[in-house]
Length: 281
Image 1: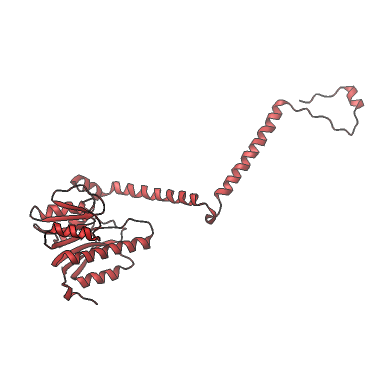
Image 2 (image 1 turned 135 degrees about the vertical axis):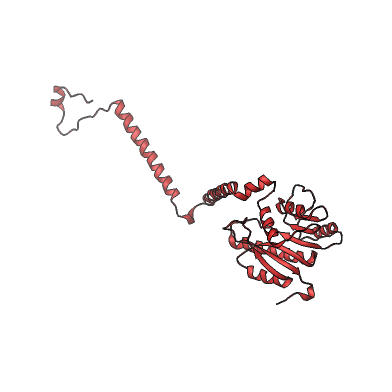
């Protein structure tokens, strides 16, 4: 509070001179607080400006962080769906290593692929769901040889080769395990490592299917069969034509265990043609 000046001071002061203002300590503290608040507000506005910059001017770190957040949300959504999936639960209850086992069981029930005593090659076998089904179906008199670039826990009645079936050393090891016999059936449930770029993933998936087709032509006996997973999209029609040139009959299957939104289907080639019979159209 400003004290009023005494009477003598009023008389001696010039009328044009401003009166002095005395500021209390409490009022000074308020002024300082206001200045600090103003500085903080300015910093906050500056941060907002940085956050709202155009996408094309954002740093690589910001872009990566945003991508990871989106990926995390997608992964969490997939995991929730996976955990609650009927076939996932059924696979655990029945001791299968993957829900994919039910795809093979359904196709086998419809097309009678597997029988006791058969020799079967499983490409891209890990984690082993299809090998489990196959070993049980062919029995002790049959033979199952599984291949994958990933390691796989042992399965009774299954010979496992860890390696890329496109390499000569792996093919030689396979032929050794076949002991001079040809296979009755080649099954292939391979998928590429998903990158999220649809065109790249589709191209890699079709490339794997093409290798499986070439591989089956080398190891199958006459009239042998190939069951291979493919994805509908670019190059699918060309691959289907190639399958028809190698097999007398080609049919498609979409098992109930396949997720509805997936573009995957299975092509079953029946009756391997001899090379001289191959349709080159």
